[in-house]
Image (cartoon, rainbow, N blue to C red; front, side, top):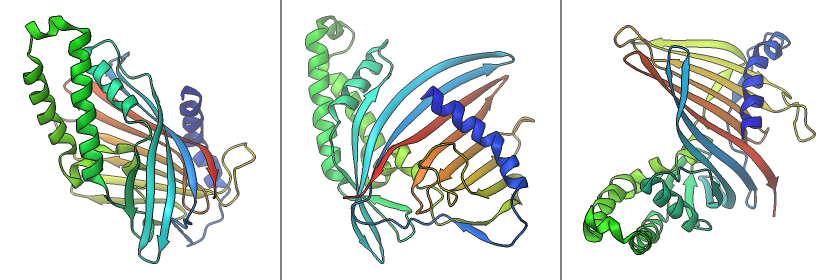
Length: 294
């Protein structure tokens, strides 16, 4: 994952050099999913959160990484049906009770089939079997709670098992208790297809409104020294600055690299938030592992 992160950072710096070689023209790059039934891709998705104060940078949360598979099960003029399946998970926080329970829940969910739909260009619409996923996940939470109390009987002196399950149920419903909430919880899916449907001219462009500034930098062509890369790949670098608050601006950077058929090769998303004299930097990074057809 670190190797991939460094590679994407290098790609971001390479955008300007690649752009200098682009001929000036009015052509558009459109992020459209030209997917086919049977398309199967595996990705690794990771998250990290840092706190920055002056020159002091501290990792405050390593969300670890998840390897997952996406397979297109149906393709029509109106859109696609796909299955998302988590395959592996690692590096979750194991130093706290909450962290251990999250990791246990994540590992227990491996192999779960999450069916979702997209529109005709590849934008995610909804989790189709959200109710089934909700009930399966809730049952796992209850089983994990029981296992934790069997392993740590002393917990009962701090909070009863019934109260713990009640608290977890409320938190669970807050995150996964509806079709909309469940879709929001799948951050990797939302980020994977977030720019599908977008059309931008090659080169640089800018949009400003009510203190918000969005800078676009679009390039086309091979940007990685590997056999699977193509001259028809394309890249988006999007910088978003939000209205100032207390003299500082929050900033989001999105760097995406796509296959010619619209499947993402990878991305690096950086969210920078200001809290007093500190910055909170959240990194989301994804890399493709395999791409095949049935």
